[in-house]
Length: 110
Image (tube, rainbow, N blue to C red; front, side, top):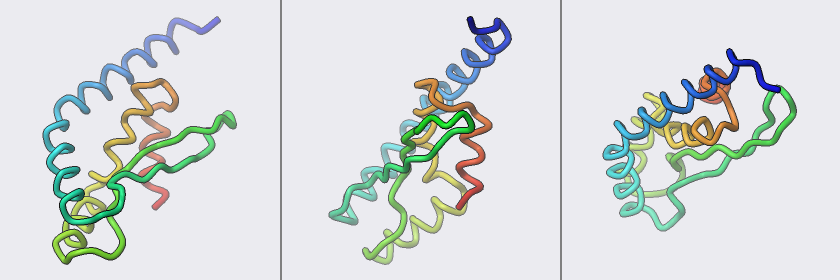
C-alpha cells in the first residue's frame, strides 16, 4: 500500500508537469515544426535509462545535433543551452514513471 505522503507527492508532480507542458505546448509545437522543416531526420530522440529502483524508463527529447542547416545547428545550441530539448521528457513525469528529481538529474547528465 502506498503511503498518503507519497501519493500526494506523486499527484502534485503529475499535475505540475502537466501544467508546465500545457504552458509550453505552443513553444514546443513551434520548435518541432522548425526542426521538422530543417531536417529529414526524426525530430525526437528516445533515451532509455534506469531509475534508482532499477526500472527502465524511456524519456524523449528534441534532436538538437547532427548535420543540417546552419539555422538548425544554431537553434539546437540554443535549445541545449536552456535545456528546452529536455522538456518533452516531462511526459514521463505525467505518466508517473519518474519523479521531478529524477527528471532534473537527466538534464545534468549531459
